[in-house]
Length: 84
Ligand SMILES: [Zn+2]
Image (cartoon, rainbow, N blue to C red; front, side):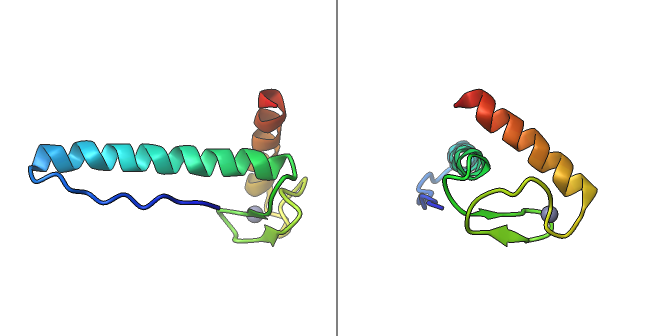
C-alpha cells in the first residue's frame, strides 16, 4: 500500500484546513483503490475491523467469523467487480 506524505505548508488556519482536506481526500482515494484491488485478489488485504490479513487478497468471508466484517467484504467485492 502506498501512502503519499504531504507537507502542510499553509500558514493560516483556513489554509491548513484546506490542505488537510486534500490530504484526507487523497488518503481515502488510496485506501479505496487498494481495497478494490485486494477484493479482486490483485494484492494482499488486511481487515480494517479485526486486523485479519491474507496475502492473496480479500477472502470471501472474515477469517474471524465476524458477520459484520463479512458484510463489508461482500459489499466491497461487489463494488470491485462492478468497477473492473
Ligand atoms: Zn474481519
